[in-house]
Length: 401
Ligand SMILES: *Cc1c(COP(=O)(O)O)cnc(C)c1O
Image (tube, rainbow, N blue to C red):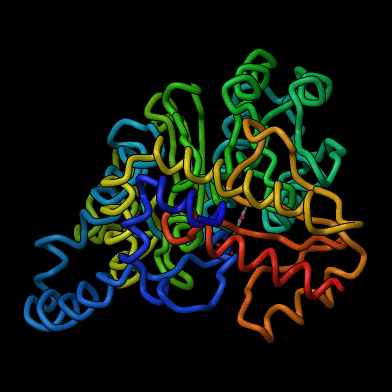
């Protein structure tokens, strides 16, 4: 038996791969960290939704289920993937909009409490949207961005954060898993460092939820956001989620105070009065249709268990690294070598990776490319086999030759 076949035979989650539409084809999918494959059962769920929930219940659906869906599904997501108690997570909007709302709420609260807190600490390799929104908020509120310069093949360390925070810090913005390198941040330690300096922390979980265990409550996290179309397979443009710790909800005011965050939306009264709890962070009508497919994925994640998913993820990325070392001369690893410091993808560096990526796409091998010279191999744990990794890495070797 080949190594890949032996690894697949020993994989306790191998049977779950058949739950994903298209996973049985010869195509090698190395981009489940950007857009997860659909769970096959999502097709029936969507059809049932259109025919029965929408088609028959019509406007009654809002009273019967949809008004509560952003927070009910938020609680499911929190239990299955985020390590968070109920009442702290809501689904809706895009990650970018959640980042804006929670960043603004956090810095306004910090400045109100202590006007000397005028800085947002963020790293230079944070995801573009996080950096751009921070830039906009700094301009809007007269704040300063304090940049942590990071190695693009690693991420923010405890020492770096300790040096950056001070009595001037209002908010620290960090990614749990770095989108480029897959650096897995030491979230409990970094949260503690920010708190010791009196600052709040916003965690971006886009590249970790569904692939890496998260314990927001245990970390004593303040705020978090993430998308649902990567490892949570919600489909293109499926809505994001926001988490606000219960201990902060009453103190924070979000900037897009729409009718759906009102204490009594159908009172349609003259002024805004925020709903209690996490509901006040909702703005407009929730995107119910966009929440259908992710429900199928959450069921599969719960069945597998996040611990087992992480174990398979580590095995998959370790196998990809082993093959890269053995078969790709001139290629260097632009991700942490220690699996304990690495999330669910692996980035390989070579100056010709841009053209290599184009050649691979022509052959139905689908990774993605990130400057500088990075071939990003995303290994969505439940829908990727070791055989797929072996075939894909052989194609990378051939494309490089
Ligand atoms: C994918 C991703 C986003 C995406 O934001 P959208 O508003 O959904 O486009 C944000 N942050 C990180 C870290 C990401 O990986």
